[in-house]
Image 1 (cartoon, rainbow, N blue to C red):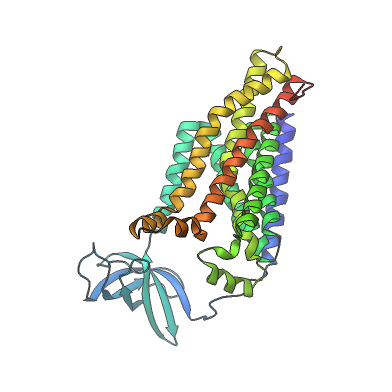
Image 2: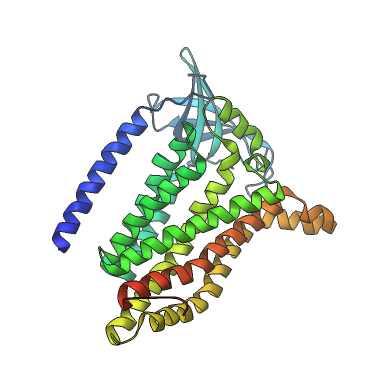
Length: 374
């Protein structure tokens, strides 16, 4: 049976990958920056021609440098580049510094500006460290977890975002991704088992509940996707695509809460399976109570995890509120605060309600006839 399920899973992945490739190849994206003379290339600083910075520890000032291009069609050529050593763009340069250059070509002449430090290889190194840690600690299961993580990012980048770009409902796009990621991730971790099916059903239910609560809370507080910080840029994107900005915010909550909800669902279904294997005489009602008991401990930790994650994302806003001594009425009615509160509370409610859902499903599956109440 396991051999057949693995074969079906592989066939599914092949069909999914093919469909994803065909889907993305038929999407035409309108270039928002249409100048064909601009390129981003890797380069190495070979000479600092002029240095108006104070020191490398302080942002500000500028540099004129000569760089050797190390990628792209101009590889090997030397050109001058201006480096504005700011907080978001540029970096302190010295001979040998690897940088990313925004290159402009006009005929045979090249000029550029330093976009930033070339940290691409280090980013991949950090990802590799995570993969190694998962494998060393978790072995085969850790490797499967890494594969599930890769699949999740593929779905987000090549399914979720393109679907919204071509005009699909952001909520339905998020639901599609949640279903796909849940099925594949839990299959990789649990296999085609009763435990896995219970966890899948509970995860999808919990995430949908979080999305419904977020939508309702948004209606009540009159907060939509149009109230985010990058709205001007998003409006410009929507003018050149079919993006429905209003629903993007709350669809993102489904994606954000998926990991925590899945963790709770898998843990509870695994616990009930283990209890049933040790004591098969327990009734569905007793198994349900055991699931709730375990879930109570998890609700506190996972809810804290989710809310702290959203709080961490808003820490800059919180510092500004504290520093400017903003009054309560201003703070409580800020869009940014309202958005973070809705994110945190909706995700937490999804976790809380996943506990009885997964407990009930697992108890029914393992304990037979089940009624939550007499």
